[in-house]
Length: 107
Image 1 (cartoon, rainbow, N blue to C red):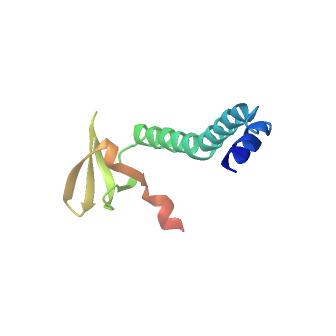
Image 2 (cartoon, rainbow, N blue to C red; image 1 turned 120 degrees about the vertical axis):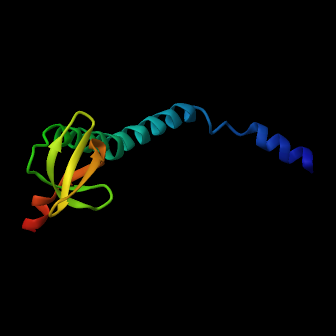
Image 3 (cartoon, one colour; image 1 turned 30 degrees about the horizontal axis):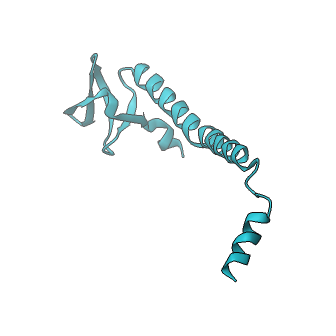
């Protein structure tokens, strides 16, 4: 009886013909969707953040990655000095400046 089952399975036409190309098409489609919904928006945010950091000026109100609010008092090549309160000034790396806090105050 086992021989009959094997013969029947061998006699049926293969369902995998052309299935390999469909797999590749689906993989490519998944990559395209991931690019447009995940990778591209992240690159756009990074570009905007880099542009913001390059356009920092003295007197800008900013928020750091650590959540510290302050006003830019001095800008150097690799770091920014932020006045936090009164006469308290802290030096931060430019990459730690996250966003403009004046936008947050309006909301």
